[in-house]
Every structure is written in structure tokens, then in C-alpha cells.
Image 1 (cartoon, rainbow, N blue to C red):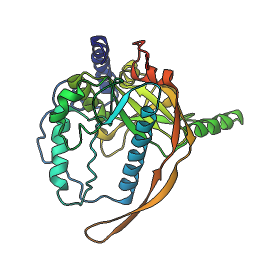
Image 2 (spheres, rainbow, N blue to C red):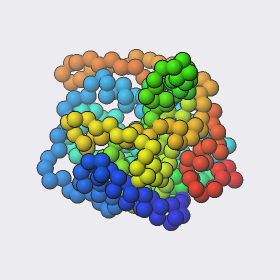
Image 3 (cartoon, rainbow, N blue to C red):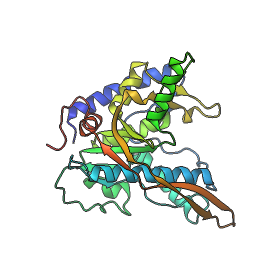
Amino acid sequence: MAGSDYFEKLKQAAGRVTQVLAGKGVAAGRLCFGGEGVPLSQKPRIPVDANSNFLGNRAMGDWAESVLKDLLLGSPSGFHPIHYGDSNQIAAGDAGFKDYYLGELEATRVFGKRPDLLLYPPGTALSGNEFKGMSVAETEAIAHEAIAAIEVRSSKFKALQYMRAREAEREAGAKVDRSCPSFTVKVEDLIIVYRWMERFQVPECYAQVFFDSIFGINFLQVFEIIGSGSGFTIEKPRQSQEKATIMIPITCGRHFASCSETPDFRTEIRETRLGRVDAFVSPVSGKFVLDPGALNEVLFPHAGTEIGR
């Protein structure tokens, strides 16, 4: 578990984030760091259907989390990763989705965004099924004992190949606007990630799983980069600034794993209650090789803690 210094730095960085993003036009209501969120003043719009794009993205996310968990389980770090995020496979349009959706909104308002994985020290007595079927409130005591948390994201790119291609374009004299992929953090997620860390007192990092590599960055560093006012860009959809996304180059984080066995792909089918058939592609298998030192820097920035010791 991180010391108080980590969370004091996080608190200070959140204050600077508020100033910077407010200066860039983000509404004050989207920048309320600390404590529970404000109860909804009106009924939210509830999704009524899940299309193949959503299902495919969810399958990508499930694969990314699975390969990262397997990597940590087999690594010399000795960490014990346990799935913590919501594993409910219910989708918009399914029976009971409305109650599930509203329940998740309320839990996030109170406790913050539930990370995908929690890491426990070597030798933990936890079996790995402690959180199955439990609400966030029911998990609080056990989750509080974790030494780190990981939010896992997937990408359809090969990051190393992307960067080599961009470098070749630049050497050929072409103008290159983006030399590497980015960590993408929604503005709306900043508050709820902060809320979870504040409540549970567990440091959290962001792991982006590409098809050829895994890059990571600690959320303290995310906050510090945004709070500095430079080193990132903001993409703002016209329809809603709530969905504005912070783009931070992956080179600001660490490359902590490389693919040693590329995944296969399979086609999956989902039929809705109204008879629409959605087909989507899901990655399966795949293996990565861990760089323990780089992972350590992602999990414990500024701390000097060494994994596996």
C-alpha cells in the first residue's frame, strides 16, 4: 500500500488539474475532486441496445485484462493479481439491464470507478474469487489491503510497429503529427478514478495492452502531466464536453511488456431478444514477456520500491 506522501502528491496534482482544465474550458462541475459525487438531479439516459461494435470492444477489453493477469501470475514479481472490475456480461437490451445500469452509476458516484485488477503481496491467502458477485461496498475491507490497482485498456494497434512506421515517415521527410499512440483518459474518468483511490488508499496505474506490447503509467503521473499544463492534448466531441478525452503519448509512461506469442482471433455471435444477429471478432490466447523493473516504476512512481524483494 502506498504511503501518505503518494496521496498528498495526488491531492496537490488534482488541484492543479482543476486549474488547467478549467482554463481550457472544462466545466467546473466536471472537476469536483474529492468525496462522493453529487446525486443525479435527473434520470440518466439508459442505453437500450448493444451493437457489434460495443460487443467487440468489450471482448477486446476482456482479452487485455486476461493476458495481463496471466503475465503477472507467472512473473517473478510474486504479485497476486485478482480480478476486481465488474464482470457482469449483461448488455443493453438484456432483461434486468436498467436496474443493473442504475446500480452501477450509484456505486460509481459513491465509491468511484472500480479498477480492473488489484495486486496483493506475495503469499496472500486470497484465492482470487473474493470479489465475485460482491458489490463495491462489500469489497471495501479486502480491497483496502491491496498494494496497487490497475485499470486495463486495450488497443487494436501494434504500438511498436506504429512508432517504427512513423519514424520511417519522418525520416522520409513527411510531416508526422502523432509519432506514437496515446494513453486516452476521459475527463469524466479523472474524478471517479481519484474518488476510488482517495477512498481505498490504493495507488492505481493505467495499463494499455497493444498487440505487440504493454505500456503503463501511474495515475499520479497522469495527474501531474495534466497539472503541468503541457505534454497532452484534449479531444472534445462537439456534442458533449463531458466526453472530452485527454491524450497522453505512451512514451510518457513505460514499456513494461513485449509480446512473445501473438493472439489468434475467433468470430463470436450474439442474438438479441428481437432476433438481430451481431457478429464480432474476439482475440484469444497470446503471451507477453515482463520487464519487472519497468513495471515497478509504473506501479510505484517516486517510491523506489522493488518488486520481488
